[in-house]
Length: 342
Image (cartoon, rainbow, N blue to C red; front, side, top):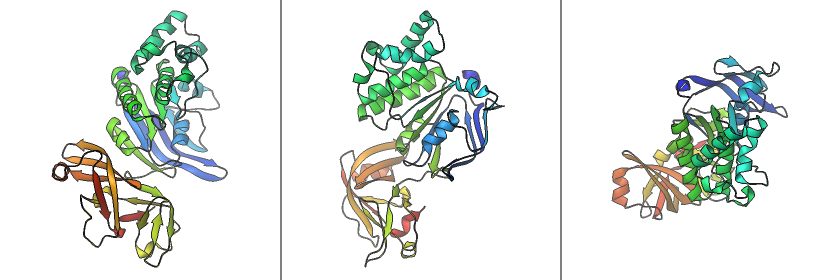
């Protein structure tokens, strides 16, 4: 598939989708180039799965046009099925048949009438690719969540799709299998040149493995990734308005008190981290535990569990000066004016 690299493989133009009279998706333009990994990042309920289903031609959009390799998708004239045969999709909770791993993976090949000898070679290659070569005769429904997701990917991979769509592939998976799945996804793209589009609410994961990241919020692509995106409600108190996430109380500017917004974001650049409580006029101060440290050249991305998980950017120098590692106890501090309503 190397000939597809850097060529526009899938394109959406003026695509919208409505449900019960409400517009749940509004994409003026989106293009996917062959041979790359794309991450669609956003909170649960933002429309990521709907977007993937439209891109995979499972759902016809209410308005707009899709193009596959430059040709318009014509739902009535039947080329949708032709194009769809070049795609595959896995779900957040994979459905596996109550049979062996090998039989599950063979399903798509049997449906296409692939000869037995070719099926065996393709199944072997797919099992090898996802690291389940010794699992062929195991019962699929007796596997762990991570292993089941790997079987689902192998079942999609065995038909050799040009585009592989992965809907929250690591959402219900333990940490060990998250790392394994990320390695498998990267290897599939590198070894086979398969274009991969995955959805996730994990920003760090998207930036680890994707060549391009599309921030997504309430059915729309937004200009920049919204780190520290929290849902909840604005409430009043004698000390001023605050945003209640259900886990923490985040103080907000006084002029936000009349808003009905149910989402806020906090820029990770505006958050101060310290080993001791930071003395300042900032009203938002929380004690937490470092749960993730990712170094990117001179910048370090931290994830800190302080009731909610806060993403923070610091320098490598600050990381070493503070002596932070996973498990370190730390304080996060930011001003009410650093909170943005969405």
